[in-house]
Image (cartoon, rainbow, N blue to C red):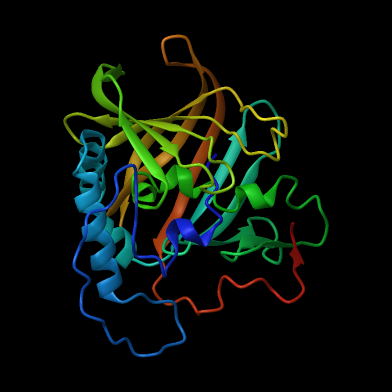
Length: 299
């Protein structure tokens, strides 16, 4: 699953966003004076500038138009950013008995910082500060998985299509497809070399031709720590199950993941994912995503 740990991807300071096409010149809005506060906040001018540049860039290609229309239908990129950091519980449950991953988490959608808290021990936490990964737990069994990899992975389930507004993202319109008797535009997402920790990842999103809502995400995992000699895991097929609307943003109600089989169809059902307790946070302190003084810093 795609990891965008580097601040260059969604940096709060990098308002210029690029995709496959070079962004056209867009007039910068007037500087906005924002009163200094102790909470995380972003000037409206930053939101507006980023949204306008993304709109212009995406509408320059057919694939981009599909994604932009999906953004609009799911609540709008302006609302997504203006809402502030997103909090939710993400309960990833493999059906083969492998390690489950269940945490409450908050993600700053502007700067890609994340904080996870165990659902069984509120003192056990891990996160990504935008520069380094960290973990704080009584013992290693609390988080029996790669927390650096997982810090931002759930965002790449729940944040589509909005996560495609950043740098290094390439979009390609594939042949239309069908799923459960519905017609979909299929958009393949790839990444420039050097983008994040797994630039060889790809996604294929199914966007309903009538509603412009995303229903399926096919993807591979190519994280180098898992595949030290290159390569990737077999493709997975994730169905978005139901929907929920929070503060104007429409997101899935949950996910069901299968192995992809011949004909790009879902095969064996392998993972159940519950996505609950969703909210947007407007009053988080500025140090919310900092690593605790007694945390272990990960390589």
